[in-house]
Image 1 (cartoon, rainbow, N blue to C red):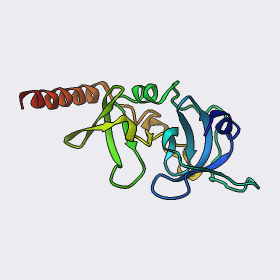
Image 2 (cartoon, rainbow, N blue to C red):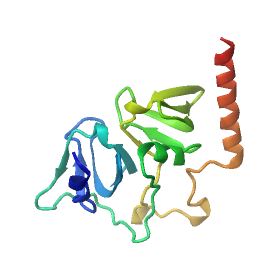
Image 3 (cartoon, rainbow, N blue to C red):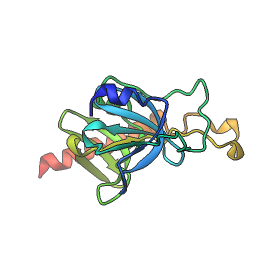
Length: 181
C-alpha cells in the first residue's frame, strides 16, 4: 500500500488488519516513511510497521467510532522512520506486538538495524527488527470519567535517571555474561 493511499486516511477512523491479535480500530493520526500512528481507545498510541499491515478498513459511512475525543494539543512521539521511532523510545516501558506468542513488554535497552534489546523481567530479549509488527509506549487519552490527580505526573511511563542506570547495569551484566560463555 502506498503512502498516498495512507495519507488520504489521516484523521479518519480505520481498522488495521481484518482480525487476529494485531487488529485494532483507531484514528489514523499520521503516516510516515515506513510506519503509521494509530490512536486507539484501549491501547493508546500504536505505531504500526507498514510492512506488516495486511489490510485497512474504512467505513464508507464513517460510522466507526472509537469513543474518545482527541484534544487539539495532543502530541505523540514522531520520527522519520521506524528505527528512529524505536531510538526515541529507548529506556522506556513499551509493548511490542499486540498478542500471540511474540507479544513482549519491557524496557528498550539497545537498538540497531538488525535487532532491538528489551529487558523483560530478568531477561534480555533480542528481537529481530523485521518481526516488530507494532509498538506502543502507554500514551493514552484519559477518559473524562477517569480523571486522575495531576500530582502523579504526566510522564509516568518515562524512567527516572536511577531506573535508567539500573537498566544499563543489567544490560552490561547480561552482555558480560554472554561474552564469558
